[in-house]
Image 1 (cartoon, rainbow over the protein chains, first blue to last red):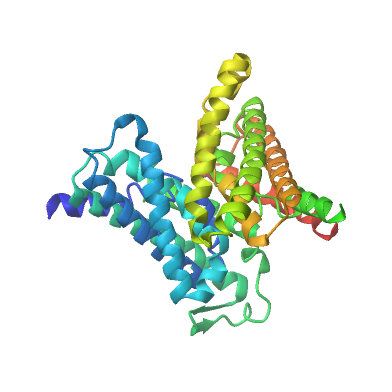
Image 2: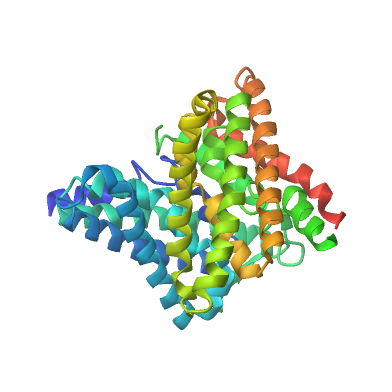
Length: 203
Length: 191
């Protein structure tokens, strides 16, 4: 359990994919307008990352080195297609609001990056731990950004229809820029600066 | 014709790939430190995007839709892009070695650029015609090149500027992108 735990925890903070490695920015910024979207996207990434890391780690000894990248991409694309079909069938609203960003998990640098840097060299259990850690780290970052953007940009916070709170003044006059694409850049820049200031994440 | 111009201009100025749709952000922040690199990357991306749009359009309309296997879209698109990038790399290496060295590492990197896969997926969901797909690819690519060049010009100056320690590097680049995006917001009413 020691090694498993270590591989899991490192993805959460020390090598957090979004804030430290600065990977997978496109979905992070594009769909962080609401917490619901962020959760949906994270679920997609968790499934794809787990599946691809486990499969690649299991067959790593049979993959010829020279064609490894195309093989990784086909495995990842297959996992993404599966996730796409599942979302389309079970969560049609979420599927609509994620739009092209759900299929774009194929070219998410986190997934291919972990396949190349970790899963192709390590046994299957560690690859799963690594995938879980990275995916949860990604989810944490996404939740942080999306909750800030949704709260300030709409003045209230509600997830999948559950209403949490409405801010007193902002509820009537929300700061719309946080919902607009430009707000995403602002929030992630300030969060990164904050983490560096407090020394939680060192680059 | 009007429709084609609307698609093209809309993607260059209003729904800019990097600033509004958040496509191709990794090279946007990774490559945009030198102006010359940014321009080679942008041109290479635009070229691959246009070719990939044509090929995926043909495959989609003559194979995927007739055989009712549209769910294979993602796998086919990424394979087409990866193959195209390989072929272009070989072709340029044989015919124009200076261009090959000018593109350098950026050519193989295009495979995992989400702007390229993004434009093929947008063509499919919006159901553009063949010419419409090409207009979307050219518009998206040109818009991407434009902001990449602007961004790198700004970042060359930014290196010398006296930024706060915690904001150095990536965070201040994000803020620059935000201001650039706000400036592009002004084009919103054009179409």
